[in-house]
Structures are given as structure tokens and as C-alpha cells.
Image 1: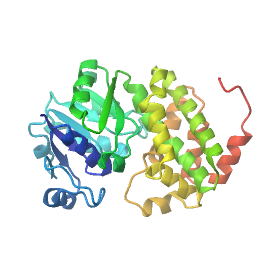
Image 2 (image 1 turned 90 degrees about the horizontal axis):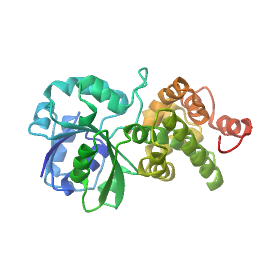
Image 3 (image 1 turned 180 degrees about the horizontal axis):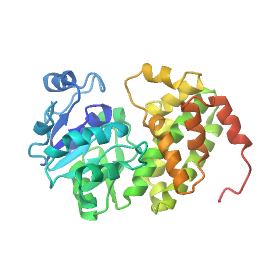
Image 4 (image 1 turned 60 degrees about the horizontal axis):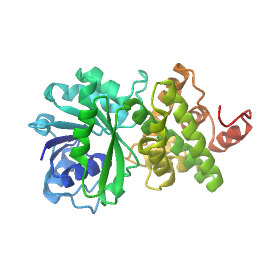
Length: 333
């Protein structure tokens, strides 16, 4: 049994806490809102994000970061990617130096274009052997309902990846290990942008031919970027690539696909954001992923057009028309 601190009391942070608890660990969730923490402690339920799901008794919550990390061997980070730097800056001084830091976040930081593991290293000074990422087809509600799922634990140090693998391997959750941190992070971040595009197609009333075409070309676009950044292309064919992409693009539980559907129905980004408390990471990261692709000389038409729609410079119908009008070429290019 290990003591684990999970920073983030949203749906994914809470669901991942259940994975950890079911695997036999004691878990303390840090929550931004004291009322959410109180409800978790008093009712053993996160009524705001996972209503109706009973949490294991080995999960407690606190608003005090120092209390959350007290005795923790592992610290899991599950906050929105664009808030990581600010939040982690406030927590860095209380996180023990030997603690393994596990990122659940799927995004690329605006302005700096850094992946989440790079932000963690920069803010905390942790070396690559102390930073792991978890990525895969893991929709929070299904995880919380203990439906069988698999994922990838990636760390530059394979022994640390195996430690985290053991930490999270439970009755309904099967983790695999990898040393390809870059591939896992880019697969997790880029699939959100592709899901926005798929959601727009659904919102426009298009069927499976259209969505399958967008998913497939989205995978090709993701792989181009990942390979340009020295990732293993096989990672993009695995759980952190194709697996996560299929789940996020296909499920109505996906925030990014749902966000895209609303764009396809004619809502603006501002209207969608005002209507929900959930964060669609793709809407935040599409511009940074596009800039990252440009930085390494990779053609990224899906990211380019999604960014234009999210920013209000293009409509969803115009985006779909633009995809068809693009210059034809070989599929394997």
C-alpha cells in the first residue's frame, strides 16, 4: 500500500483516485473548492463531477496542499493543462524531493509550447526519472463505473514506469509501460483537437464516413508531429494514440467531441464555455499544437482549421468544405 496525493478534484482526478484506491492505496485528493472536499469527506461522493458514484473509504480530500502531500510517495497532477504552471508553482515547495510526479494532463502550454512533463520539470526541477505520464482511452465516467479499461504509463526510467504500473493495476484497470513520454503526451493532446473536428462533423449531421475519414487523417497528422519530435511511431498505434483517439472521438461522454458538436450546431466558443464547468482541453490547446507543428515544419490542416473555428475566424461548414478542397496527394506522404 502506498500513500498517493492527487491534485485535482474534477471528474478525471476523482476517477483516477478510485483506480488508485481499488489497487490498494491510500489517496488524498487536493481540491480547489473546499465545498467539494467537504462533500467527498462527508458523503464519499463527488456530487459536482461524478454524482451518484460512491467513493472508496480510502479516499479523503483536503484544500490544504501540504496536508495532501504529507507522507505521499507519488503525486498525481490532474488539473487543466493551461493552469498547471501557476498551480504547481504554488505547490512545489511542499512536494517532497523524492516523490514521483505523475501527469494525467493532455495539452501543450500556450506561449511556451511545452508539454506537461516539460512544465513539471521546469517548475519543480525534477529529473525525467521522477516524471511519469498516464495516457489512454480513459473516459472518466466509465472508469468511475469500473468498466474495464487499459492505459499507458510512460517514463524515461522504465523502472519508475513499472512502479507506477504496479501502483495503478487494479481489478478493472490494466496499465502498460513505455519509455516514449513524447509520443504518449502528443497522442493525448492531439486527439482532443481531432475530437473537436469529429464533433463538428456530427453537429453538422454527417455520418460515419465523414467521422472515420477525420479520425484517420487526424491520426496521420498526430503521427507526423510526433515523429518530427523523435517519438516512436508505434506509440501512436497503441493505447495512448489510436486507443485514446477512438474513445475521445466516438463517445458522447467526451468533452471535446461534445464541444465540437456544439460548434457544429452553430454555437460560439464563448457560448459553449459559459454553458459548462467542464474544460475541453482541445479548445485551449489547438493553437499551441498548431504553433508546435509549425515550429518543427509539420503540415497540420486539422489543427489549423479547428483553431480557426474555435477562434471564430471560420465556421464549421466552412471547415468541412476546406478539407475537401485541399490539394490532393498520396495518402502515404
